[in-house]
Image (cartoon, rainbow, N blue to C red):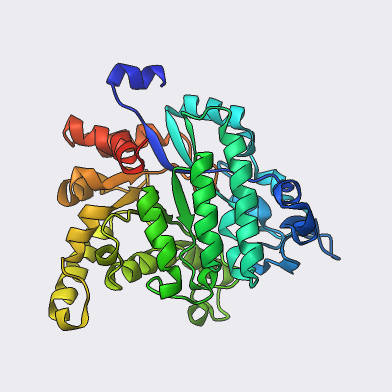
Length: 383
């Protein structure tokens, strides 16, 4: 714990930080017989760096891999296709655990839950369920090794792909034994082969994470295709970059809403869900809307409680430090349901976010501030 936290008797927990996987993670950690299909970064015939996933190039990241990191760097530089490499956007704190601990000290962060970066990019390209599970298994093994530098402060969150339901169950059991505290799930339907969350083939997975007391979390993804292609058109490309970047949150919001309205929280009353990197200001209005629509359409719903009641029983949502209404959201929703995230070291993250967050929530009672800054995450994940 940092001196600042000790003085204030507050444990500050980043509920969504990221690693920047070294480009050779899958070459080193995949089983030897699969390494010819490893995720890798190579330059194409034009000398432009590409992310290759089972031999396929990720179209939207071609020449822009540096922008997967990029904290504090020039977005125009990193987003311009050219000779830039992935490592050009990788601060050492993204891939070196000791450097990350030093960053955490300077940022007044005591504990961080760690999520992937390349891992939020590859699922839409994979069609082979077994290789998807193998990619997850390799990443999870590497991440546990990364976090071994300080198991108290660096908390691994397992990446699980639901395209392979049986493999997902086996891997989440293995990852739990290795020390992973929760599960990252892509919200993209392509990552599940188009299966809905209540598909009977996924039932063993939901039962398993419930029994293991491992919260699952939806997080934005970097799709290989546009999220809303019908809106992209052929107009101002600069305008669409902002449009697409803002709407990355849509996948998370849709996945959360689908989980809720398909009755997953009714079927699995001990299942826990964290809603990440979609902001938090929308959640109160959305729960009000869901409550109203579910009451009107009650004959067509398996929900026995209001959506807001399920949310408070089984969910948390992550606030971003730059949001201007976090204190009001906490006051309206309740202090037990909001966590926060740095998103370090991504391009849209920034430094000194703990100071910013503390300013945002300074009007709340001290107990509420303590919950948002760290206690909620510790409780939710059983840390």
